[in-house]
Length: 123
Image 1: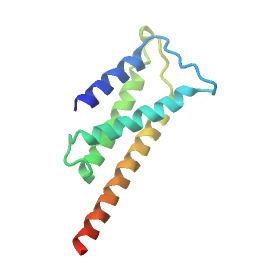
Image 2: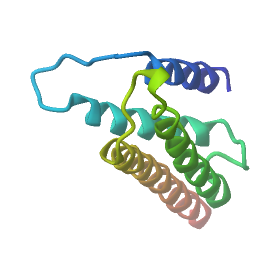
Image 3: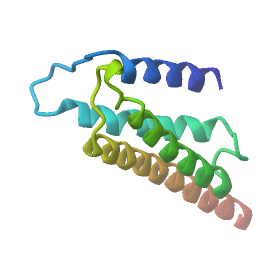
């Protein structure tokens, strides 16, 4: 929980830091940052067990829903002029893509765990 809380606070600060720029040799490196940040956010949210065991369908589902909602709130909070940031749909869609990738990773882990448990019971 502490890791997630620290991560969430850092991400909130970074996404609202005025005029923050990412210098990289690729066009729009911020989109990759959105993808990576929210993929890890989803995985960490699941690991906190807010909604049940880490790999339970309920925990993965509600972590997905709440992470998508937070991504929208975070992007929307960058809209006011005094924040000196830009709210953009492409940023939000890369947030969503990151959440989906994190969800797929957790779902794959849940499936692998179920297969392993079934295999171990058959022995």
